[in-house]
Amino acid sequence: VYIWQDLSLPQMQTLADIWISHFYLLSALGTLLLLVVGFGLESVYKNYIRPGASISAGASVIYSSNPSHRIQVSGSRDIAVLTGIINNFADMFENLSRDITEQILASRSEVEKEKNLLASIMAELPQGVIICNRSGRILLFNSRVKRLFTQSSHTSRAEHFIGLGRSIFHLIDKDLIAHAIEEIEERLNKGKQSLASYFITPIYTGILVSIEAIPILDQEQVMTGFILTFK
Image (tube, rainbow, N blue to C red):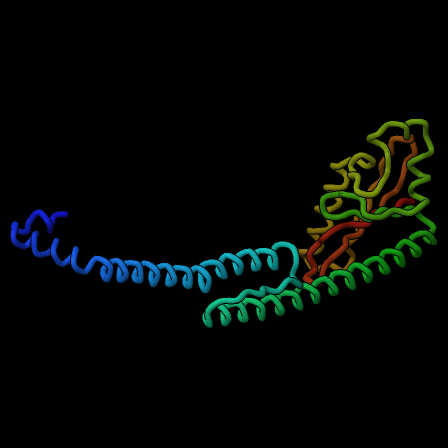
């Protein structure tokens, strides 16, 4: 429009004559240009944009829910190369996930075997035994200690119920156990061989019990839990 306004009257007349005399040719060229641009845009969409969206959706499925899924799209050579790379990484990811799952299942099976073996050994012990983690949660106990804490009508109270995952501090005074742990850690720091700590306390059933606290240590000699034996 701006170019047309800058033209003189003779120039406008000349352009109008050219347009009129070559109307069909110019219309055909314009139509051909539009078709070329349209086919070019369709090719870009078909070979790059649409495959890119499919690749993104497929990669999301592989990562989030189905490691066995593989991307299958048609497109340009670059898209094919990108798809192959992603599928190769998907193979590696699936194999790694399978190996990790197998290791976890094997570890759980081994832990369960060791736990059953420990429970069998504890069942044969002449004294009551409770195994706790570092924070005082009960991990395991035998039938003798269960009988010890169920010899009174007070066992109907929820805080005195002995069970896996419950706190030992509902059954034994927390300060006594904390003091025993402090003694054990002090002996650990001094490198002493005998680490057990002993104390006597009444329990809620009215029985006076003698308790031995024994630390559970990891490979670095760090206390990760403790065992209480009752006499």
